[in-house]
Image 1 (cartoon, helix red, strand yellow):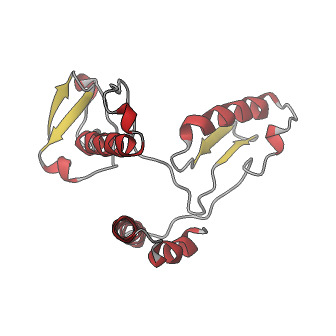
Image 2 (cartoon, helix red, strand yellow):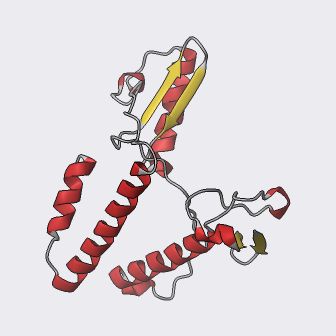
Length: 182
C-alpha cells in the first residue's frame, strides 16, 4: 500500500492493492500512524463530496460561486434493524452507542447525553427513550451480508437513475424498502 498526504484536501490518497477496497478503514491526516488497510477510501470520499456539491448546485444554483470549506465522511454504522441504540451494562460498566445510519452528527449529541445520564444513574426522559438498551439482531454471516448489502446498493443506484430519467418513483425502491423495514 502507498499513501500520500494531500494537504490541500486534509486527506490521504491510497494507491495500490488496498485502494480497491472501500469503507474498510479510516481517513487520517497523520501519515506516521497510517497502517496497512487503515485508510482505504479517501479517494472515494473525494468523489462523493464532488457529487454532493454538484447536487447542491443543481438544487440551489445561487450557491455555484460559494466555496465549501469543510467536508467530512466515512463509514456509517448500520444495525441490522436500522435502529440506533445506546446503553450501559451496569455489571461491567461498558457503555455503547451507535447504529446512527448516517445521522450521527445530531444523534451523537443525544447519545452522549443519554450515556451521561445512564452512567450517573439519573432517571430522565432521555434514559426512558426506546433506543436505550435496544439490541439489534445480528447481521447475516459473510458472505451473505456482503452480497445483500451490495445487491441493495446496486438496485437503489439503478432506481435513482430510473427516477431521474423518467421522473416517476421506481418500484424497486418499494421492494427494497420492504427488506429494510421501510
